Image (cartoon, rainbow, N blue to C red):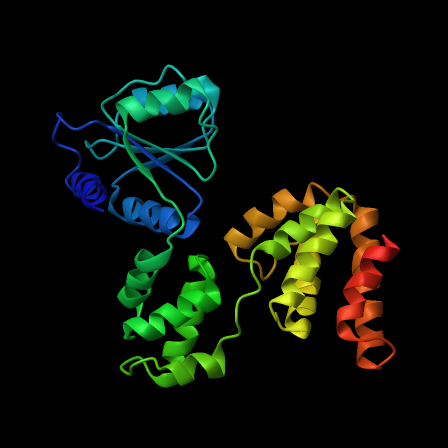
Length: 295
């Protein structure tokens, strides 16, 4: 975090030091912390410019700031047209959740930029992050991390729910977690949905069996399937209402793997199987296998 605070301080002072490298590169799968860093930079910047191409960058870089200070130029993704980028009088920020590390631009940024790879927090790092967000003991934070994993978007939302429930000045207890938080359905659910997209029934069945073997709640698992496919359908119809930007970003990539016809078929079957389960025509675990057999 130390290097990150330093660029933010220079942003707030208008980047008066010429000795600093003026390129920052933020990357990695932890989009929660990446977005937090970007938001902090945006708050401190006197003039902020988003660019999407080399001509846009050259124009923004050459035009003097209206405020007499250095501009902050944000570039999302590592587009190879920026491979010849060099330091300038402004601060340039590249950010990418999943950059191609084989590219010339990635390798160059590692040499000339202030870089931070934002990996998913795990183990004690995750526990200490949880403790930084809430009044909670180490053992209870450890339990919360076991329940929810490394998804800090989900973790942040659940911590906010806990604090609102018990009162923001109170200590979160083990019982509070048991009462309010369901154990996380792991990211295997996304792998299962990906497997369905390419008609890999063998992998999808294996992943579903893993969920049921470890005791994942069957109803919660089924509801998560319905929730994910409903979001994918919404994205297909360009309906982003009620969806967090992070959910939109993740779901859009998944939606590209499905045809609209296949999505409508799957979602219709999920609704039918849900009705059958609720009317005792089939057991809940059987609904997953019926779904796979029907595709």
